[in-house]
Length: 273
Ligand code: PEP
Ligand code: MN
Picture 1 (cartoon, protein in one colour):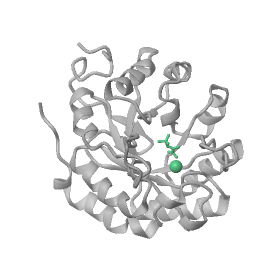
Picture 2 (tube, rainbow, N blue to C red):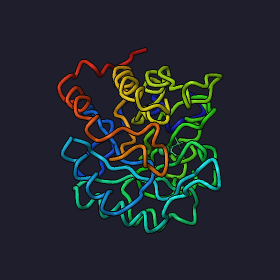
Picture 3 (cartoon, helix red, strand yellow):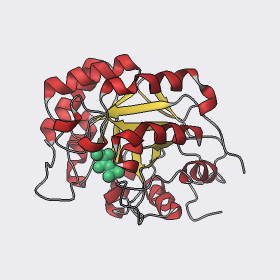
């Protein structure tokens, strides 16, 4: 038995399925999470959410607390952003996901969101992992920038060991020597993690590539490799986005991909040992 006992496929053979509103994650049907990197402005967010819902997107994303590399970059709108995200989700009829960066924000984040995202930079913030482990609330744990699969699964174990069983994993690319792309999306991780763990796995090709023209090809590859869904950064006007515009798609660019996902079940394969 590996050290990540509760996370391991050896401790639980059947897939974990997480229900959020009308949506199930890990239940076989591909899940699409989409929205801007950061929540910006109310009217734009509501319009975008309704458009994404019409395209078949299941869950709305948007960061209110942004862990930016530079302290001078847009840091997010905080509680005001959480309110906008919740309003947009309600208007469109979609559950929402947002990042928690600090335990001090837990009660605000839980009030306004349906899934808590723990970002790459906090994957080994063990105190924060334990805090969300004590909640009864779905948590999506992104892989750290330079984390091995074992370190990532052990980070998920920190959450589960505190009692929270609703954990979703998210592969978002790792640092490599390559500079053409922002990160190197680790396609190996998709079938490997599905074999090692029963937890649902979402692919984030937006951060995994950092270049909008690469996002959908890598999203397709991740689905073909066995991911339970994808998370895509989408903005109505990517060149004006306050964060991550270079990797954001316009909503209309999702149309054919959404069609492929619903019609082409062969895109989705399952690894076996
Ligand atoms: C994000 O989802 O916008 C984000 C900051 O992701 P990551 O933690 O993977 O960099
Ligand atoms: Mn982003």
